[in-house]
Amino acid sequence: MLDGELTRPEILLIRIPMKATLKSCDDLLRIFAPRTKVSEEQTIPTIIYSGTRNLTFQVMKVVNDARQTYKHKYDPLSPFIRRYHSVTGDDDKAENMDDYNKDKFPIISSTMALGLGQNMKRVRCVIHMGRGDPAAIVQMVGRCGRDGKMGLGLLFMESTRSKGKNKVDDFDPEMLQDEDARMDALAVTPLCLRVALTIDNKHGYIPLSSEDRNYIAERACEIDVGFTPCRCSNCLPEAADAVLNVIQQIDVDNFTTILQDPCSFEEDKSITIMNRKSKAPPTKATCKYSDIDAAHLVNYLVDQFAEFYEYTLGESPELLPSDFFGHTQATAVVKSIDQIREVEPHNLALLERRMGGQFSQIKYVSSTSQSPSGLREITTRKYLRKKLHRQPKKFI
Image (cartoon, rainbow, N blue to C red; front, side, top):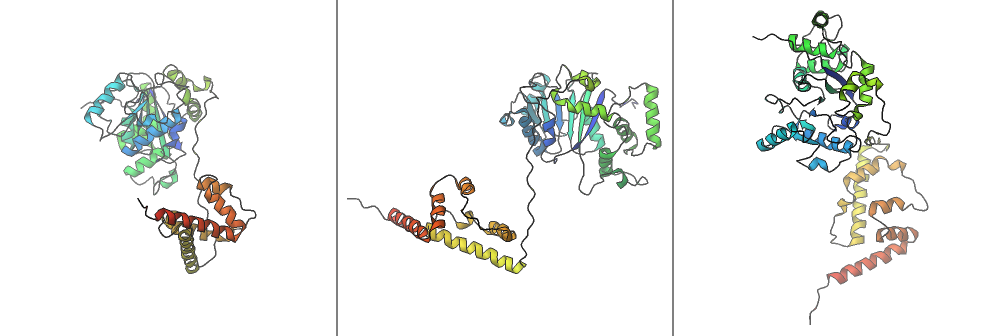
């Protein structure tokens, strides 16, 4: 049996609360700089671990968006980022690993499939997306800094997990931690991350209190062994924030300098973080009608539009009325029908954008809104044109 020290003091651990959803992976937008600022050759070798195969491709999308290389995510031989998962073909796996070890690209988006049996000494940074098993995270983060140089581990953690424990008070100190509890504890513990992961490896739980006897013993052991003081995001939060402020400027030349003294590095104000436009929350219904009356009104609107559509375009339109206005649209109208107000004159600017330019649709609305005869005129003209078009051609 081998008895050795598993702690990796050369790896800097930074736990980052996620601002975006795990499914979107948009938190990676603040990690990578545009291609014009940091080239592929200057990017530090990195592995980004995700929980599913679909997320490995989403990571590629977000990283290329941050790099402003929007179409490169579809390039299987991208010079910047490629992916590796269990369904990747054996030949592709071998080719990607060979190219990565030959410095042909710096970033791998992977699942746990990139696990045992791979020895990649050039990895300098490991990013883990979402909460996960502490033992697995230790294995993933341990892939950086294997050449003895400094490494960086970025742990993106969801601030809240559905049906999970999201603060220290949610844990019962008298109960043993199961797998889910260990995962949640790593996301919320205020203690040293390096010591917490070591205790999980030795004793099978993540400590949450500084009075934990195993935690106190492990900290004393690190001092006796002569480990350098931990600089994780829990031990030195200001230094961790300073690293994140300039992380987009990190390259192979300044990597060690920034990790050792991030406050001395000047932030490049010309690099802006790409922000996604968040979707507006759905408006709450304000209609006071009863469910029965609202249902009748929805059916009435759908039927009236169908009659209008068939009257305008004829009996055999190429598209159905529901393609333009169906039950879903009518329901949305009824929910806020009390907010509809008549405006004179009609504002057709929005209608032009929705219907595609200043064509017959806009002319139709404008003319019919001014005089009832406009509707009959346009309808008659369309009916005659359709009837003429349907007549069989006579050949002499």
